[in-house]
Structures are given as structure tokens and as C-alpha cells.
Length: 416
Image 1 (cartoon, rainbow, N blue to C red):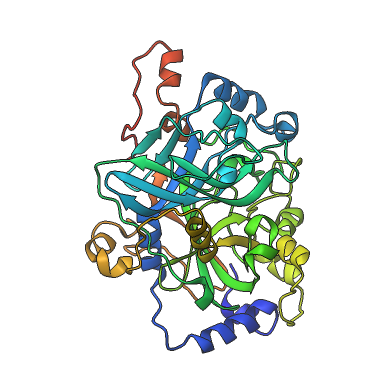
Image 2 (image 1 turned 180 degrees about the vertical axis):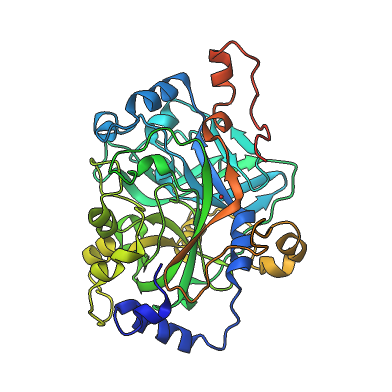
């Protein structure tokens, strides 16, 4: 992991970060621990419920780098999201549309939304019936999409890569506060929270990984490189940044220094994937590939000029997110009224942030989060872990296949 001292004066990041810190020196910033606590409470894991066919697909295609080329719409695709609104017992999760493959919607698969308490909330009726490309009128339903994902459309995504999915619960879950992306400038640090999918990566020997049951939520951070008008970006992506996100974090919240959502993460830089060849899929551009700090200098070079402005370079060189203000414009145009949280979660949920959420490491007695002086950093939260994601999302399928009693949906199976 590169420190600030190693990179200032050597790359674009150093110049941007110094400028951003100077410009924002009067603003109070939350600590990494506080931002991670907000992220932990509000970030969810989203995935289709596993069927016998999907389980067979997973078993047949593991360790096969051609898997997505042979069956691009058949494979299971876990993603991320953030709880942003509530109406009665209905919670609304902001995410990206490519977490919902059209084939899975057409098959009427159930989806599961795993919240911070370890419960998976099964959503049984999710298909909006609009197909891909989208047809009909956007209405407030269990799933409403501003774009769609299918191998039958150019680029796999048609429209804007944003979606909202809802689930029902009697429990009280915090709502992630929305911020203002207009106040985020190049050089400002942003934080991305989400659930990496290690099976989409290669191991140290360059082989696609086998079955990986355990998942852990990651908080990644880095400086903003550039912003453009959402209408100019690909599928709406308009905020570009350096980071260390990984596959599976698509749909996760992008937080500003005050822990407010300013974007929705959805694309990793193509350069990262080409440089490290970490991604197992060869049929599509790598997304959210892991960025190793040792390769940062090679990726950036020594050029201290401002970030490029042409969209092709921005999309290939940097990770990117949707702009949350653009999302608000889209729902306003669709006459969808939702009550969002604008109050700092730190103020509203002090007890949640300080009691039981940040447990120190048993050996060191401290929370092992890297210092914020690291320009690009990440933290895999040991207090936010799924031990067996396949059991969690089987909704009883595995047990039925073994003629054993079903664990059912919504079971608390946990102890990122």
C-alpha cells in the first residue's frame, strides 16, 4: 500500500490530493472507522436465490475462464447496494441495474438482500415485466430500473445503469444519508463499500479460483480524478476515481468525507484489469479488478498533468460511479416520491456507531484500519462476514437436494 509521502510529486494523485485537502481544510471529515461503521450498517449484498440449474452452472464452470463466454447470462452474479429510503415496512435499496440479469428476471427467480444483521430478506416477486431494452412506463415497484442488462443488447446494458430494489421487514435499519456530488471536487477522497466476489478473480498462480464460500465486505478509498455530465458518460457513469475495489462491489455506495452517498459504484477501470489480468471473464471488459499498490506508479506514470477529459480515456483508466443527483433527477422525472435521509447518520445513530460495531482486533487490541494518509487504501471488515454465501442464498435448495429439512428463507445464518 502506497503512503502519501511515496506518491506526492510523483503522480497525478499527489497533486490532486494536496489541492483537494487544501480546498477542503475547513470541512470536518469523519474518521475511516466512522465511515466504515456507516457503510457497514447500510451496505447490503444482493444476489439471485440459487436454483438447481444455477448450482449446476456454478459447479460446471468453476476454474473455467471461458465460462462467461459459453453462458454469459447463466452464471450467478452477487452484487452490492445501499439502503436509502423507507416507507412503512418497505425498505428501498439503491444499486446498479447490471446486478439484475434479464434472463434471471424472466425466469422469475427470487432475490435475496442480506442486511447488516446477517438476515437475508427474500424478494420473491421482482420481475418488472419491462424486458430489455426497457418498454412501458417506469413505476414504483419491487424493482424499478433505469436501464437493463442482457447479452442481447449492445454493451450488455441499455439505458442508465441504475436501479432500486425493495424488501419488507419489521426491523429498524439505518438509512444511508444522501450527500451532494456537486460539492465533491477532483482530489477529494471518496469511499466505496461493497461485497467482493473472489470467484471472479485469479489466484496467485493465475488460475481462476475454485469455490469460495466466505465473503467479506470491503471499504475502499481514493481520490476523485474527474467528473463529467452524466449525459456524456457511458450508461450514466460520471464520477471517476482511483481505488482498490474488486468484482462484486458494483452497486455499493460511494461516500464522501462526511459519510454521505454521492455516487453508486459500478465500473472498475479497464487498465487495472489489463495490467494485472485478475479477472476470470474474458468475454467482457474487466470490472472492479483489484489494483495492487505496487503497480500504481506503472499505471499512472510520472505525468502530473490534470486528468484527461475525453470520456473514452476516463472510462478505461479510472473506476467510476453514477451521480446520486442524477438519480434524484431520474426519479423526479418519473414522478416517484421517496423520503431520503439527509441527516448525518453519525448524529442520528451515535449508539450504533460506537457500541459493538467497531470491535478491536483480539490480538492487537486495536481496530486494524489503515491510516487515512494512504492515498489509495482498503479495509476488509472482519466484523462483516458471510461464512457460506451458497448456503445463505440457496433458500433451502441444497437441503432439498439432500432430502434434508430446509433452512428456509430469511434465516440468520451468520455469526464484510
